[in-house]
Image (cartoon, rainbow, N blue to C red; front, side, top):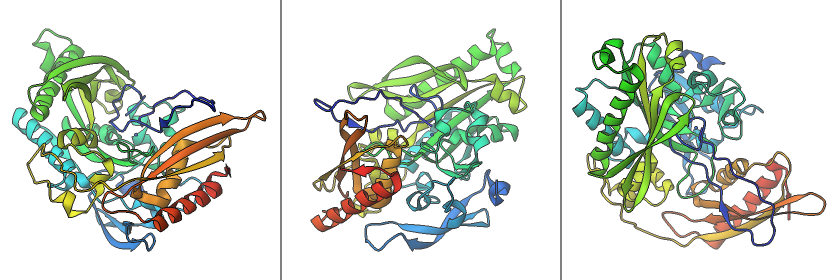
Length: 442
């Protein structure tokens, strides 16, 4: 879970618009501590799945169908197993509908094209040593998602505000590192894990509650570093940097690079790789030498390892010139026809720019109010027709009551929205915000 902590302000006059924004990178981020049972227990790890039996959320034609059944390695899981009428469950229909879509396994999709380009680099430079996992089940235990990567028990990333919980012990994975410990225990020493990850998040052009990550891990044995005259940690760090510099050149060409020392609880030392691309410094990924405690718990007390993580949407938006993260989910042929298997970096050509419609909404907040909860409600009503939710005003009166005013931007990526559609959406948003968040509209 990537958490950005922001200071609170309570000014009424001269309040500058602040976009609600959390980073959607990997488990490796300088702004975060980590990059985010029932009958599911028997198949939480390494099972392919596909979707079938679609049904509609509602009748409006722009809404995606909700998948009613998922097939996890032959075990049927119904929607009611994931979306439950239970106070510990916060998975909405819109999120369940994304399970099984697997954009990263579509070879003509920008996410799949980038994944395969990274595969090509590792195959060419490591003689096919790296095993590839891209069909691991996104339903994982809290132990796998948090404990196995040393996330403290009281860390904010475990909150219901940030993570999608199926029940208190089961979540939709926040990051692909949820599979790292199990893979290590099973004896894998060189592997890449790619998959869809889920986080309750803000609404703007670069953030979405479902996105895709890739993690890489390489394990070393004493014989690997002893002949070099270096200690295991130094040897792994040097190999890691050499590997990732090569990957950056493979993806972006001959670019200037720099390494930034940073801190992550699961790697030591830890680094971020930045490249100078299109006249600015761009953070590409986070990485480091794996904490010995993680290896020890996996039965590898005499080994050292490195790990890296990167966000596929973030890099794809740069490489392909895609301006809005919602486009990755579009089925419009004007989008999908622009990309071909193996063609990395083909620049996206905008096929439409329909005008946005802005609607403001003000209300008195309560102690339990969070911006993530607000965004979840807005997405639940408007889906991908909402482009941004932005805080534009904030003040506290003499009675100590705090008011927030949010500006909601509605825009379809594929067509013009009618006034009636916008008004109906805004009316439903207001009703749902009031009833679900228990705020007082102004």
